[in-house]
Amino acid sequence: MNVNTILSDVLSGARMTEEEAAFLFSLKGRDVWKVADAADELRERKVGDAVTYVRNMNIHLTNICKNRCGLCGFGRKPTEPDAFCFTDEEFREHCRDALSKNVTEVCYLAGIHPAFTIENYENIIRTFHEVIPGVHVHGCSPDEILYAAERSGITTKEALIRLKEAGLGSVQGTAAEILVDRVRKIICEKKLPTAEWVRIIREAADLGFKATSTIMYGSVETDAERAEHLRILRDLQDETHVFEELVPLSFLHKNTPLEQAGIVSHGATGRQDVLLVAVSRLFMDNVNNIQVPWSKIGQKMTEVCLMAGGNDVGGTMFVDSLSREAGTAEGTDYFSPEDMQIMCEDMGRVLKQRDTLYHIL
Ligand code: SF4
Image (cartoon, rainbow, N blue to C red; front, side):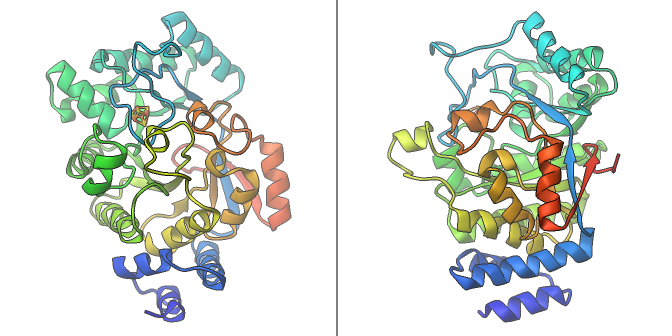
């Protein structure tokens, strides 16, 4: 395969194959910048010069989790000394904090508490709306939906309908990690298999939900498995148009069971971070928004990836305990719009605030 041919074909409108994506992921040296350059050109043509962000807050209600995934430094067993689960009043206090920060979105990110049923999730969503009127609630991964449905003796479709009635705004496409079961058995053995993840996202789409698509890269997957993951997302998007964005999540290895077991010695590299964003832009021709999550890779690397096909920085965040526990390199709690503005001016791009569904505010 030839990198120049692949890039010129894609820029002429051809759809990249999975094999070509795997090849691009393997590139090193100057070829990395060729891919980044083509991705930046496509980004400019497709979505222009805006860099978007959402004013949001992550709320980590509990770190107690049924899964204890190999890739995660956040989840705890109920008996571990630093396990926590907010009381109702503590949860409301965090919601009031979000309200005071004028967020338009709350992102419910937490462990999957082994005792939770669908009622717990309904109550969480209703409380968000009660304390922060008008807020968009983004939450409930397919793994959470499946577990809550099973615990409650209902189907996943019924669970989704109840979550929608409670006020869930959009479904989190997390728990995707790498949608290849060989990899899932190593990095998140207790999470739902690939076919179930796809089935639940399809159900969510049928009910009118929008969702995020994600990829957690840099642990034990091969270049071919990364490409297979993107192909599964692209096929699902062709069928459902459910995804507003792709969020490439750089694997952070510190304090994870994978590191402690000696299965990984490092997380994703800078080359992989750039290529993931760039190849995603070139391969995912049916997704407009390629997010660069600054809390995973730091603000300077975020700027580099925004010049390699990215057009969104995700949220202001205010809290990201998941990345902090997994040893991210920089401060991860808050990226102020003022600092985003400095970054955008430095690149010659325009910062714009959006809502969760990418409407410019
Ligand atoms: S990644 Fe999510 S599901 Fe897995 S252990 Fe961590 S909090 Fe639990």
